[in-house]
Amino acid sequence: MSNESVRRVDVFFYGLFMDKALLKEKGCAPTNERIASVHGFALRIGQRATLVPSADHSVYGVVMSLSHDDIDTLYSEASVSMYRPEAVLAQLSSGMLVAALCFNLPLPPGPNERNAEYATKLRALTHQLGFPKDYVASIR
Image 1 (cartoon, rainbow, N blue to C red):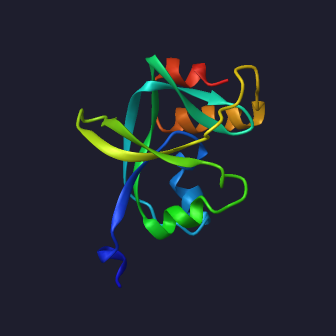
Image 2: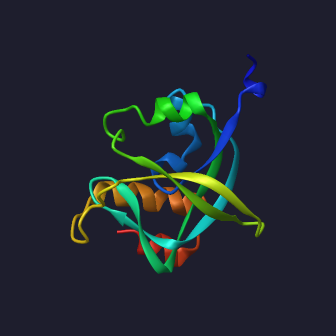
């Protein structure tokens, strides 16, 4: 089956997997990258990043299209195998809404848990992607 005929699923990434080059290093072939946000969630960083429900917040990220095999490959790694898919409605920078999968931890880190190294890398990536300055600054 050719790569073009493989069914692809939109996935909303909000952590370091927003880096298309990183996904390619992991053997994935993401396509159709689009800047987006998801309302009703806040970013929480412990040892890893996850989203937690929060009515007054929005999280910025990137929607990419991946094959089911790519998703299985990506989330079979021990460091992220505990993440579970959830459906979200992502608003693209164009204003269009798209349904996407979003992978989150079933048990989020506590509000006082921190990973300064991860947060520093994520701030740099969100700055590079051109996310709003107040959002970039809020990543701790």
